[in-house]
Length: 71
Image (tube, rainbow, N blue to C red; front, side, top):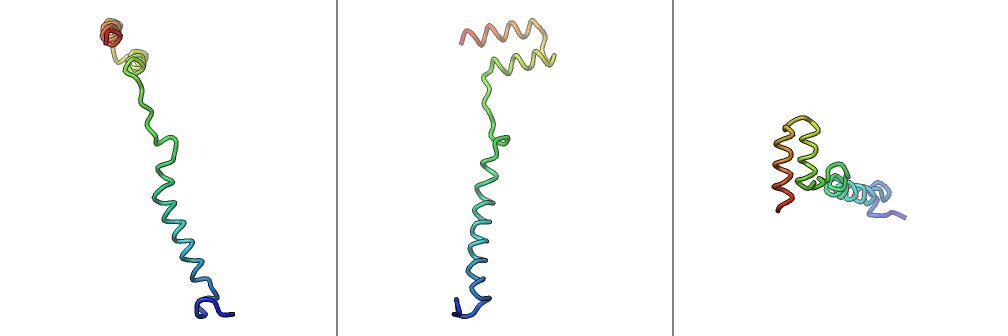
């Protein structure tokens, strides 16, 4: 019983399968990582976060909030 003309006792075919699975993993797995998927936040949520961090003043927050709610 010499599979594949005696090359490594059939292991040659197994290595091709392993490489194929590895290449599929390289191309598809990194795109399925949950933390890499960007969640789109609505503008009001972004505004609230900026106000909470102190990046904008209360007046800027209220003015921007009115503008966003009117749209």
